[in-house]
Image (cartoon, rainbow, N blue to C red; front, side, top):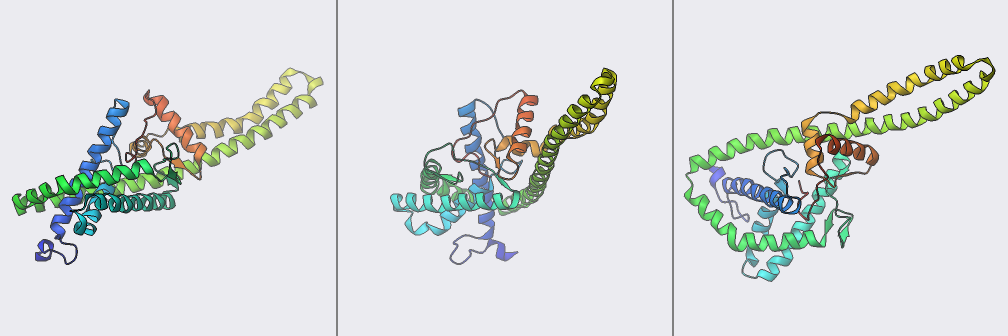
Length: 293
């Protein structure tokens, strides 16, 4: 347990301090995202990959910058430039990993000028650079003084509670992301089946009507009704898949309004449209740095 409070070589902070920094800056990052959306859209939106008010990428980003760039804290321009590079690389790496794991692009900057693969853009990078200078020159020293003042027992209790909550929340969010990908896959398969079935049914009905044209309307109608039963069953399954009620999956879609599925794009758009239609809302806009997990 003593190791938890020892300053780590090179790092310059103890595990105890790093844990508090991670939660604190993750929470501040979440507030920044929420305020950005509120000012832009006039509404509240729970941002980020987790349900709780913590955006891990901000916690990791600030810790990396604080540890790596400490020697240049007295040179604001260099601090700005290096922070921009480090955090942009972090954002890109996280975006690529999420894409590979869950088959979705969770934030998309393709609508913003000077972007690369929709995962990073100049405006977002500038946000990271200026934000890190503000954090390291103004806010981080205050946080370090606060950590020295807070009783150790209170800090440890806080860390333990947050660790349990973050682990549970992460497990739920990962499960929701996996289920979302599987559901989109099934919706896509059903959609293709509906199209293929409609082509077969249309041809069958047309051929049947022509073949019984001289035998009366009732016979043609009976054949048409029989051949459309399968299509109706498929359509009902499709509607049920679109109208799911999993709150975690719905929250992820709302939290990342620019999310793109590179495997099942049409299925994701169908689900998004259903959610917007049933919730009576309009699609949220997203500013740079607001769609991070």
